[in-house]
Length: 234
Image 1: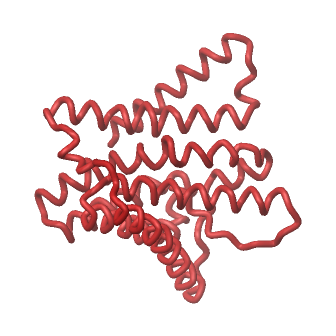
Image 2: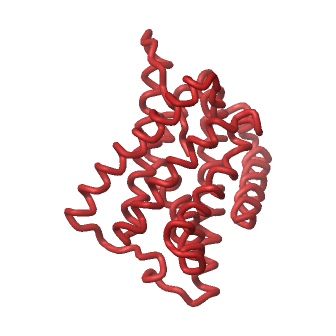
């Protein structure tokens, strides 16, 4: 996991420096920076380190339990999308009642000045964010935890790790209530993975959850609507 973030960060720096050297003012372009950071972290970093791990261990797709979806899997994707939003809304409501304010994802601040980046993030949610994070956290990390500790504890441990690594994106420990929300959302994804035994399901649910949030935020920022969004893209 650390390797994925290190490789992703290093790749982003190299790519940004190279583009800047070509005379493109990329540091002033929020859209290009967002696309590059997503492509390098989830694409190069998470997907890359996951494929390297599988190759090094001699594992095939059977280890990931990734296969073509059936109609039942498609139906469970729909259920999963509703489930993640239910978890999000439920946790947010509970935190509000207890007097806690959740942290705001850094993408909200960036998108406020450049809403167009959200339109790029919608397809990237399905192409890179969902596949990259689910391959690493569910396909590899959760599978290893489950093999060692059993299904319930394996899902909990993977979800805890998944939530913790998102702390920097929400501004540090002050975002702890929101991180708790991410933990519960991750439990839904982990449960879907074990129940369906098909990584396709959490990948698509993850991508859809983020894409819907990005689309909703774009609508709010580009219209006069005053809509409260639970923007917890992960």
